[in-house]
Every structure is written in C-alpha cells, then in structure tokens.
Length: 83
Image (tube, rainbow, N blue to C red; front, side, top):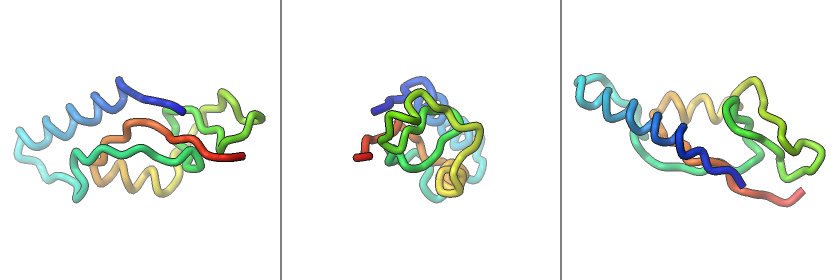
C-alpha cells in the first residue's frame, strides 16, 4: 500500500548512529516492520482501506506507532486491508 524508503533509511541511520555513539538503544532497535494501515502515522498516508480517506496523512501517530518509534523500530511502510 505504501513504502517509505526514505523514512526507513533515515530511521535505520539513526539507529546506527546511536549504536556507534554508544547510546542506549530501544528494545527493538533496527527491527524492520510494516504497519497495518489501521494505525495512523503522521508521516505516511492512512486510509484504513477506505476510498473516503484516500490521500489522508494524519497529523499524529497512533499510540502503537509512538511506542514502536520509541523502541527504535524501522517502519518500512503500510500494508493494505479490506474496507
């Protein structure tokens, strides 16, 4: 549904920089993950499988998305779902 190449690369670089600097890493540091399109992401379109929401980019992250980002997960993009 949506692949965030640039965002994923930036997240991976951030994890690498933390590791090289000896900073504390999140428990899921560097783990690649694709989110189901039901979870809002402030930097990617979220449609929840509905044509009504086509092109909508939310101004906020879902709680799950926030927690995954805090754990240093690398979000590759969004996967599709039925309406």
